[in-house]
Length: 322
Image (tube, rainbow, N blue to C red; front, side, top):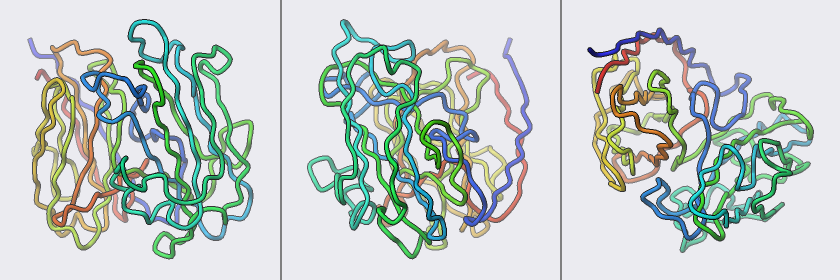
């Protein structure tokens, strides 16, 4: 018999000037951890190129020091994914200055290009080390003006690159942009965003994860591409124009798949809610996945850690057997 649970979701899509929290993954996303494998990893475990890039936007009006904090930065702990003996190293690098965001190789994650553009502000390598298991490591302080100033964002952009430099284990971790070195405290008006997102889905079949691509006024259609979804349930689109009955294509083990979807006028300058609903009978554990979106010109679209927009809408999430 199919199990069915109904969840009510109320999303307030507020403007860019509102106060945001900056955990990555975001609280609204309901995603346990980001994931990056060592440079010798097997892509069948859910990471296609062993690198992740996250951007943080800080408003021009904010002048206090900021910090980028990493939860469980090492490999070898309880939340990481082991393959044989622990042998994996991770590099975390923070960039600001000209080109940190505006260099297209960084947005497109072209690893043989200039993806590490900008001015290197801090960097550290981590290996198996129980000192950092399920604990926070803090980079900074950084002056907000050390980021790349972009008028279209109304502030400064910082970039963090997380890259596997050795080994084949999976590193699971979380990030937070804070105005305090020893605790997570939101930077008023800041936000986090990313163009190619790599993360761990919940093991619990009743947990629904979300990601929020922002749709600007120029977008008429989107192409979503995902990797290694293991046929784990479905991705449904919810917006002001769609109640959740339109699905995005997902693939199997080590498979890249894509699907194209029309954008409606009422969705522009707002976020879509892509709801990731797990299979109720697949019992799929430790599912690491990759996803990105492009507009009709092949340009990557940003995901924000919380929905960005102007309107309030309500949707019902139906979780049932798949």
